[in-house]
Structure formats: C-alpha cells, structure tokens
Image: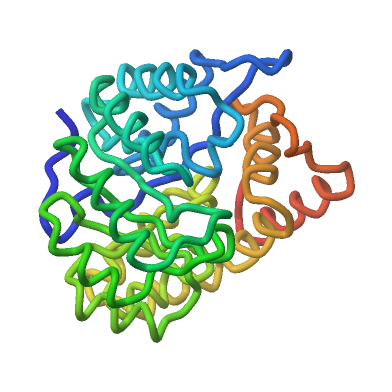
Length: 299
C-alpha cells in the first residue's frame, strides 16, 4: 500500500518527476530505476512521477512504460506514491495507458493536457473525464500550456473537479493570479509544477510540489514545505532564496538534460538521453556545477 493520502494531500507534498535511466546502449535500465527511486524516497520524497516529460515519455514504448512502473513499485511502492504519467494527445491511447498503469499497480495517474492538436476547452473536458472514467485511480491533471499549446481554463478546472477521481492539478502555467482563482474555486489539491514558483504557489494555496530539482535537493524542498506549513514563513523564504541558483541552473536548458547530468555528477543512475534530447555540452555541465555549488549541492 502507498502512504496514507488525505483529501488535502492526495499524493503527499514532495514528489519528484523522475528521469528514466537508460543503459549505455540506450535500453531501459530497470535496476538503475529501482536504485534511483529508492535514493529519492530515502531523501524525503512522498512520491514519484514515472513516465512524465522528465522521464522522456515521448520516447519510451507502452511496454517500457509498464515495465518501469512495475520496477519502481517493487522498489518503493510500499512507502511512496507511484504516479504514472499516461497523458498523450490521443484520448483512446491515454485510456489504454491508464488501464495498463492500473493493472500494473500504480497508485495514481498524471494526465497532461493534449499537446500539439490544440483542442478547445470542451475537448479538454471530455478528454480528462474519459481518462478518469477508465480506471479507479485518482488523477492529477497537468496544466502546462508552454508545452501543450493550450491552457486548462479556470472554468474547465472547476468542472473537472466535480469528477470524484480528479483530485489534483500540477500547475506549470506560471500565472499566480489564475492559480489563486482556480485553487479557490475548484478545491483541487494544487501542486507546483514550476520549481521557481514552489514557495509563491504555497502562498496562494498549493499543498506541495512535483519537482525536477528534487533529483538533487529533496531534503531542502521537504524543509521548505514543512517550514511554510508550520507557519515559519521566514525560514521557508530563506530556503527558497538559497535554492534560487539550483532552480536557475537546472532550467538553463531542458530539465531532463540537466537532471541526468546532475545525477551523473553524483554517481547516481541516469545514463544517456534518447533522441531528440541530447546530453549537456561540456560547458553546460561546468555551468551546472557552478549553479549547484552556489545552491549548496555537494557533488
């Protein structure tokens, strides 16, 4: 069983969107995935997002996705929420992935806004509802218009929140005003999907984070959210400011690229990236070292 959920924090408070380790020849590294998952949970994650964008989901097969979820569940499923990314821009395919994740034993689903084909709001509503109807698992929406091309409007979020299994939203919209209204009106558990806005989103009602920088600073993220929720806003602000170089450095290029580079620097499983992603250039790695050191990360 996964850790106990509450309506306020259905997936816990600190989750990392985990990279997918590959072997040197580009195959799925299931042993590495299990070791990395255990490391991240030991560091303080309540849960892991598997097969998300940072997990290079556009380049893994459906069979690989199921294998990865199964392996991570075996490693940490008794002490962390294992949430499977199942969103695509094809509703039928997303339903198939959701059912496969449920069969494999995933504790929840992350469903991103359909990308590229730019459906209207009614299309988004029907898409998310169909995926939520397909299984008995709780669903976290993923609103990231910079990648998907279409934001989920506040009105649509409010409608979707009426579904009994749509319980949360990962917000990478970058708009605190819209987030404030959507949190107030929808009642969804709100998770920051933009590390630089982790603290600001807590201030308008978010309950936690789905993080990329969690690969390297989970204890600090845990300390930040615990300080804030206990009322020590000054301490939370100090942690936020200490982490600014890490937030900046990890997103100078694509987060999956820097996350894998940072893990490699720490001797943790990561491996190469699948095309069209590429490894960080030497000068990018040197800059990453500077940024991480400035944020207190030991390499």
